[in-house]
Length: 503
Ligand SMILES: [Zn+2]
View 1: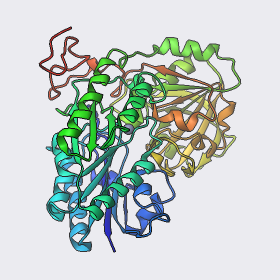
View 2: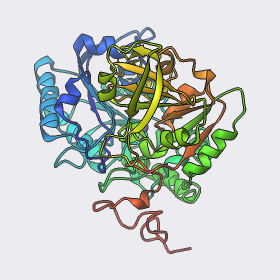
View 3: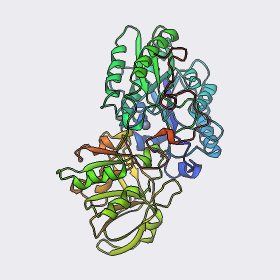
View 4: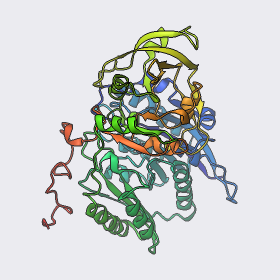
């Protein structure tokens, strides 16, 4: 029987964040081994769910061996201790549980470890060193991956998600497994090629249901219809990473080898480049955003996207910029979720219905707001565990926000405090503290694209607000030392290909 190892280490590293991705954070619910991995992921919509999916239609199913999956929220670089410990265990497991006929590797693609700027390539290279040159390695990465040649060199199949919000991780996992099995069964390796663009797409233009991404992805699907073309994927990249491979790219696979794959990748990349101006865009100021919230009279809440404190991009999750302004203006019907374990602990034992005076949020060094004093009533509590069985961003099913408390101010602003950092992916978070998401005027979510899929059922439209922070909209505000130069839009006269004349 064909044996496939299933493992991975995921991190989206915001190199401008000073919060380290340390071993303690990974060990606090971020690592699942063997059967735990099956329980955590198999019924989800994540990459590992696709790797581990039932093989009912396959007359010759493979033996899937779940080894280890390590995944935590985006923040600063993975510490050397965490990286060496976890990758060391992955390598040991591959040796101990092997031999394997193929490897399915789930990565994010934008991981940076202390001293290793391309951590995903490093992991894949170490896996290659264990299994040798003949065992196919299939990798699935996030659409925010910053892909480099070293990663492409080390694997045989590379499939980035092609949706943002990410609703296709499981599908990509299944596809990756099929490709790896195909290589094992036929002995034929398709060519894989990467075309890197000197281009950053602004966070507000990354939604794949909106233009110009929707048309670009439709074009890549067309190119996939050409004879021999197996895959043409557009990678948006992760701009909040000061590394040489930061930026957009195209990955392609072709039956006729690497040069054929490179040619189709260049064709797609030229079309992405032609859309570079449309791939830039702004948001509303804090004042404009709150004006729109105050004026909103529709039946469905507005989803207010707090760009500068995007938890899915490495934001700390406790910025109070929007909350402070909503409280100052006394806009009722607004709900904000904040990470604030200290205040949750201070409110232990305070029951629903009790009145409390506390200052909330604004404690991390990464954000620019201050703790906001509120006079409020406790309106909900929970242990912070909730589920999203439907497909939402990233495909996770089980969430753990630690102890949660919901407070409502006398002006009608609701604040939900969590003890652990979680991405705002599902309105079930609000339901878990006895709140009805549809009852609000506006739901502030600390994300940009990620929240849209899960909240689409509840909200009638969204606003993108350009708040300050480590995930702020304007990438020109960050001091990069290691990115490629020139790049668009930093250097507006950037040419692509590099030797092309200015037109
Ligand atoms: Zn992503």
